[in-house]
Image (tube, rainbow over all chains, first blue to last red; front, side, top):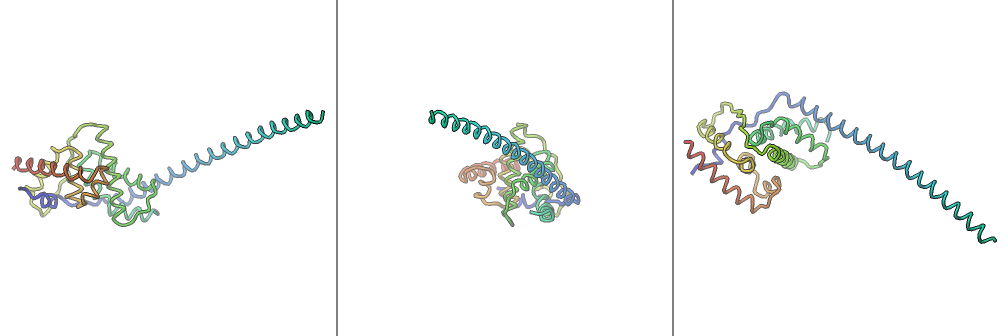
Length: 77
Length: 151
């Protein structure tokens, strides 16, 4: 029976690549840029959400104010 | 993780990952880089050997995606170089590995070349430990038979 552990141990060792440092820096930059783009997109979404909620608040208050005025007039008669 | 830490981790681990992925896919360099990119983006806070385990898990998943995309057991480019070890045994193993499925190659590599335990291999490959034991037993038997035939 073949000794697989011995056969695997006989394989060439993992070789370092002299370009590894440069590649690591490129990966780091790519990840940072992706994070920045995501943050930017998140900020835009947040701004839109804030604007939409403010618009909803104004509309709701407008409707409530009208209802209050209408109720005051109807009860006073 | 800062830039310097990544550089150190990459220099220490990328050769092992490249060698592992080189047995599974034909674009090992790209997948090695993608593995580290995903590791960074996921923001893991592991340290020491745990980081290496996570990297191997990511690499295995990426390789698995590549297998399902291509559905072929493509011919692998061998990057062998002279070492002190017995060359006949080495060539036999490389040739025999080519005839196994990518999953069998991954199982054998993680167990025999990287020395991970069944429990760790199971986690990396997303399988039950019992399945790893059974599949590994079959893969070992198949590999040994192939190597004996090639002699």
